[in-house]
Amino acid sequence: ELKVEQNPLFLSMQEGKNYTIYCNYSTTSDRLYWYRQDPGKSLESLFVLLSNGAVKQEGRLMASLDTKARLSTLHITAAVHDLSATYFCAALGYGGSQGNLIFGKGTKLSVKP
Amino acid sequence: DAGVIQSPRHEVTEMGQEVTLRCKPISGHNSLFWYRQTMMRGLELLIYFNNNVPIDDSGMPEDRFSAKMPNASFSTLKIQPSEPRDSAVYFCASSLGDGSSGYTFGSGTRLTVV
Image (tube, rainbow over all chains, first blue to last red; front, side, top):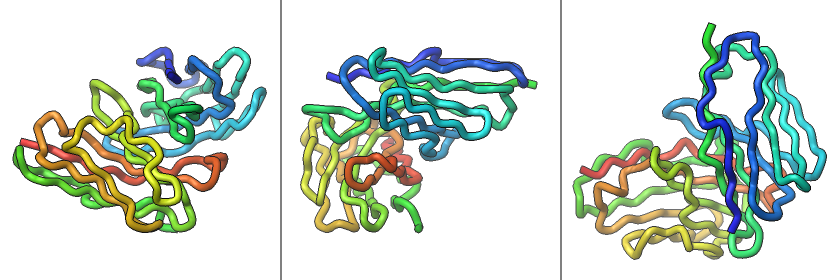
């Protein structure tokens, strides 16, 4: 059964600092998704990582995927307050859960001035 | 593109009543997913459909929950009878093909059962 773990679950950062959120998954999955959720809102797609070694960047966020280590990272560069939100990673299930996304518990990011 | 459309946005109902949540996926998407989000359990997949056929309903909590997808543009999630522990945000999502272009989520339905 595919399990997805994120850490940290809570992250308080100062503006201008860098940090990384980690996403580990337990069984084979060659596809990884990152989402952002603001309080009371839906999930907004950030990145879709489709293969080993994939790296994508959008603004101050950069995501990467290492399928051999079963690890994805979301790196935040020079954080700003607008990045405060909860970030979820999700891996694509195989076998019995094929075709659906299995989510981590989310990382609640708070960026303070 | 209007995105994934869910209704209602908010629903407050009394315990024991029937609740029906609705979802219209993005036109052309052939997979549809129902997720439930709570503080305690996070995001859980309830059921997903591919080409209108239920593929995996192992996440449906119990017989009180049922889902249908009568055609490619409409799905319902029904709870009968509802209980306070069903209170949660229910999201519908859709995707195309193998999901390589992503999964798009609707705005969600916030259900409160009192």
